[in-house]
Length: 140
Image 1 (cartoon, rainbow, N blue to C red):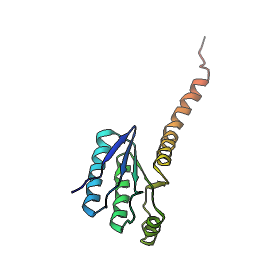
Image 2: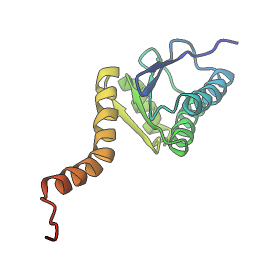
Image 3: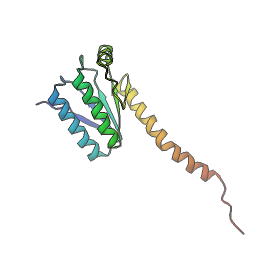
Image 4: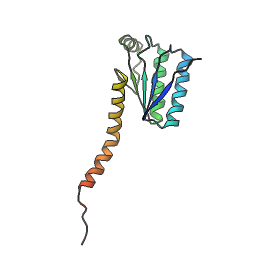
């Protein structure tokens, strides 16, 4: 059975699906990705589906499940490279892909994850900076 490679780029796992997503391959990817999120501690997952011409309901549900598993393991999922025909098929099948953000390409997906991460942790940093800018009052 073929496997989909999972590459680590900084704090992101990149999955580029270049083979037909048969049911067993999709299930194996789900397991492999969960294992890699835990072993690497990555907080973002990008799934590039630009090579897929067709996404059936099983693969669509598997993508949604991968996003849910990733979120439970503290990683956000972005699907990139979706072809218009694939988007139309997913909508016609009634698959909304909850928990999955989308971007046109890998670069935009990485930017999206970076902005999201900065927003999550930027607020805490801003509070620390505000406290640092406030002069300490000491009793004399």
